[in-house]
Length: 327
Image (cartoon, rainbow, N blue to C red; front, side):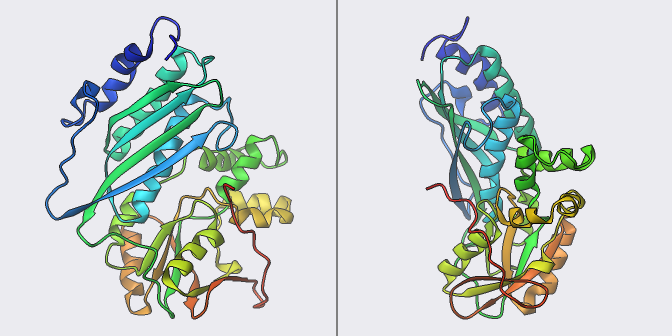
C-alpha cells in the first residue's frame, strides 16, 4: 500500500488498528496472519458480511467515524436478527490514495467507540490501495446456543407479523442529508439524519426473542422486501396493514409536510427486527421485547400462498415499493 504521509500500511496497522484487537486474547494484537476463535461449548457460530461503497451506501464526504460505526452496526444487525451475541469482526479496506492519516485515525476511533458499546473486538483483516472508490467490507462473528439461531424459514400460516422500533426514519434521513425536507424543524430533521447515519442493531431484542418467534430477519432492504424473504424461505404469504406501521414523531412530522413521502417508509435501511410469532406465543414474545425497552408492534399476519400484500385502512391493496435492490 502506498504511504499515506508519515505512516505506511504496517505502521497504520500497528499504531491505529492493533489497539482495536487488544481486548481479544486470540487476536494476538494483529501480529499474526490470522486469529484463533474457540466457540463456547454448546454454541453455534454465526457469520455475516456486508460491504459499504462511497457514494453508494454513504456520502464520500461523510465523517470517517460515522462511516466506521455504520459499517459495524449493519453487520451487528444481521447477528441480532439471528439472536446471536457478537464475538468479533474482520475488516477489509480498499482505500484510494487521497485519504490521509487523519481519515484512518478517525475511522478507528469510530470502531473503538462501538466496540466498547457492543462488546466485541477486531480480529484481523486487510488493507489495499485502489485507484477506484473507497470500499469497506466487514465480517462479523457471533455465537448463539446450538440449534437456537433465528431463521427466516419457520413462518407458518396464522402467525402474526411483528416489527421492532419504527420504519422510514433512515430513508427520510437520507433525504435530509441531500438537503431535502428543508421545511422540517431542526429537531425532527436531526433525528431522521441520526437514524440514517447510525443504525440501532437490536442485539438484546434478538437474544430475548430466541425460542419465542418462528422466523426473523432484519429490515435492511425495506419492510416489504425483507418480509418477502421470510415468505419465500417459509413457503407462505403475508399481509401488512399500512395503518399499523410504527412511525417516529419525526417521520410523522415529515409526512404532515409532504404526504407523498409515504412510500419512503418502505425504502429500507431501518435495521429493525421483523419477526413472525405464533398466536399462542404472542404474549411471551411481546413481554420479552418489553423487557429490552424496544417497541414491538404487530403489523400483519402470515397466510397461505406467496408474496406480501400491503393493505390500507379500508382493506384495499396499496402498491408498495420493492425496497432497495443492489442490482
